[in-house]
Image (cartoon, rainbow, N blue to C red):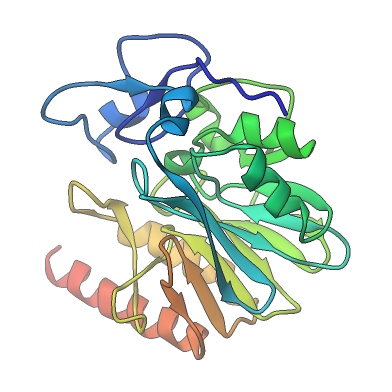
Length: 268
């Protein structure tokens, strides 16, 4: 497979840009940050030489976590959701090589990549080319795409049906295009950090900026709850390794939102 080994990758957020530049707009946004030592860059070629290795962990029934060890940039992992009609790679990671792509393919045909928000765009174009699949991003986050490409499919509105019981939902938390993926058959919700699973795995939170500790607006959280209400789910897969709510997830979201809104309104 051919990868873009020399394109610049931001060391802080892991996004791969189409050409060298002095800044990373995603990191300069208030939802991320520029490191104290300033903007710095790497490439896939340098990451291959860094001693990192691929990491695969079963995160649930027919759900495989995909990432690298040690982690890079924000440190999220992708999730390969395995379905008879075609697998979906949910979210994305920067580190990618031939062996990782072959490991993903070994679990069945991949139909699509879908990503929750711009912080996880990473090397999505290289992943899309290697797997020969489209990448689904919400139209509201078009401005953050670091490397425009024909493999990217923008969708708009509140939801998009991917088939096989999988539906993208634009909750708008964290980013205007902030998206979660609902799996009807597995009764699962894949959220990245649009709904952030907390360390105890028994709550979720709603943030506009995690590193800068800016809470999400109550009106946005209420809209997200309204969109989720018709959907049935019992588990939630968050952004990090093993950050999974394994049961009672719909109740977890309801009581988490109630607590969040109560505190937000007390401070209003």
